[in-house]
Amino acid sequence: MNSLKGKIEAVNVSGDLSIITIKVNETNFSAIVIDTPKTDAYLVIGNPIQVIFKETEVIIGIGSVDGISLRNKLFGEVISIASDNLLSKLVINTNVGEITSIITSNSVKRLKIEIGTKLTAMIKTNELMLSK
Image (cartoon, rainbow, N blue to C red; front, top):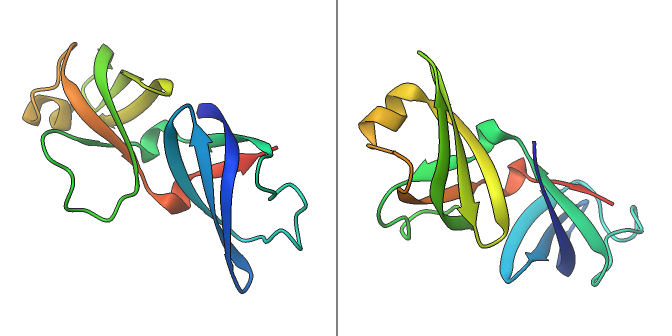
């Protein structure tokens, strides 16, 4: 699991759902949760929070990734690759720290990813988990 320390910057509520904006270093993340400040007291602007996401939920893009709906984007450089026949584990150095992505080894070959490759790591808003 990837885990980053951040601070709640904004809470946007609609019905029983909230979109939470979390600042990690100078990067904003968005997470959707099935809670509101009325149902869970930790959803308060300024509160420290852990942003957690699975390695298998980190999407990798090479080149321009501006024309997509994903809001959680981290720009970084590959510092480690461990591959077998099916899957590869990439460690990426970003401005929020090191994160890990697990993608298919075929994708690593197709995208020509190697140590030093600059890329964009992306995580869907619904794939982020928050922890106090």
